[in-house]
Amino acid sequence: MEALFGESINDLKYYWLRELNLDGILLIVSRTGWSSELSYELYLRDGSKGNELWEKIMSAGKEFGLKPGHTSSIRRIEGGMLSYHADADINTNPYELGLDQLVNLDIDVNYIGKDALKKINENRVKRKQVGVILDCVPLEGPNTTFWKITKDNKEVGKTTSAFYSPRLKKNIALAMVSIDSIDIGMVLDVEMFSKNVKATVSEKPFYDPKKKLVSS
Image (cartoon, rainbow, N blue to C red; front, side, top):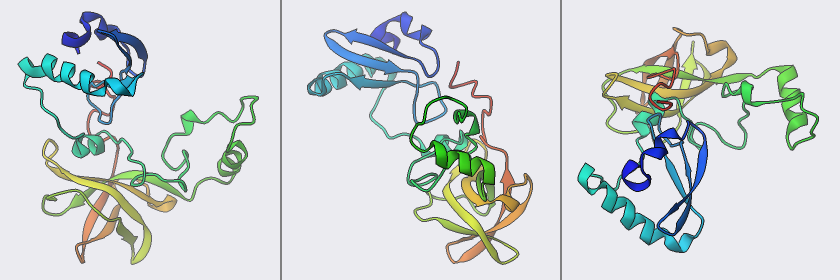
């Protein structure tokens, strides 16, 4: 990023954005990303400049060995970051995801969903997202289906995102479970690959919970 924009880019704070002009390419650069690493996102003002921007990025990154790639699902799960359609969907609300601090019911604005959120807040949620550690051999890839979670032979939820973390040497997962199955240390059963494995409810994020890396 310094090679592209100079050292001033280091002053951009976590979750802040800045309008920049890169040799005539108008951009919005934000200090965000799909992992819990120090990362940036570049938004084009003019989509026709896509190829030109790509070449500039690859040219600036050549000396650092930059290559195209995909966002790391392992790092995302380690950081407890959500993926829409997997960890959340149209039927999920912020209270279930532990995002209560982002809900303002006192503001004097009747925004869309406010009445529904008030009702949910009053009645309390029946399920919540948790982290779990899966006690099985290292997963060779991510889950491609939701794995059913049970306790005492009763279905209590589902595993939404799972992967093996080489850093932690554990199979880690995000899961949505009933409110009576969220206690840290509680042992649940996960049905995967036609067998049951033990899963222990864990704190999340699994790694760098204070987000020191992403906010550095």
